[in-house]
Length: 369
Image (cartoon, rainbow, N blue to C red; front, side, top):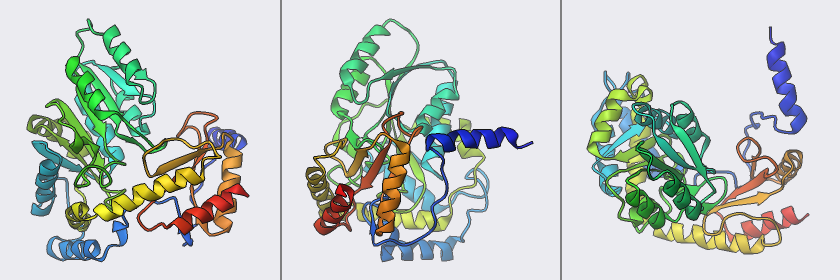
């Protein structure tokens, strides 16, 4: 009965794309973590989570629409809405859940034209594939290509959506957000922005690239609490009408148990700390520039982010280098097809506030060998 599954596994083993859970271990030098600001181990955040558990319990006990709504989660949503310059916000258990369930719900009521950056996250692809919408992909961060496609479909009366990440987590690129906003306004399109890797690291107060631009009313923003915020979960920032719609039409929200009060307690404190961490953000960006300079002899993607992909091209070679680094107490991420296109398999370094120039020099030296 399991022959079909064994054959499927053999196929990915043969191509070098087989995945297994890593053995839990501590390493001296970690370049694979998304905990960019170190907040997952921040004592204030941990204490806030503990106190929230004492006051509200460890579990939410039900969905938000039943027994799982509580003051702390509404407090967080109100704060996010203010800091993201939006009317409202809604919290989800994970970023994948937020993207797939929210976009599926928004796009399911009427077939739409979805203009979609080719580098978008798998959760965004999954959402569109769950609907009857027409997917129109444009070249990565190429707004001239997007402009041409929007013009091509200008006379199509279908609702139009533009979906993009603001910081691309696998490629270390940032979107030209002001130009993207202008295109959305010119064509009357909804703008859906994924700020998973931007939340906490960009903007004058650290609340994302979306806060650096005066965005149109028809904008919906997703961000996560699992990267620079250091906890887990996600949020949608949006117009109030969209929030009300999502509460009524999003199965991922309606039928899911609300996030643990302990998780939300930690997120509330971490979110409050974000504007105080300008020095840490500056340090991350300075170290990232240094790392890119030191790695200039390799094929490195991106220019201005703390995410540094090093293209290897061969999945077996990627795993070989990753394992060799791990044997020397250095952890990096191995990113292979289908997460990235074929022949662009890569190592991914994530620079955090806890790294030093000596750390960068050490990983560069190991890679050079």
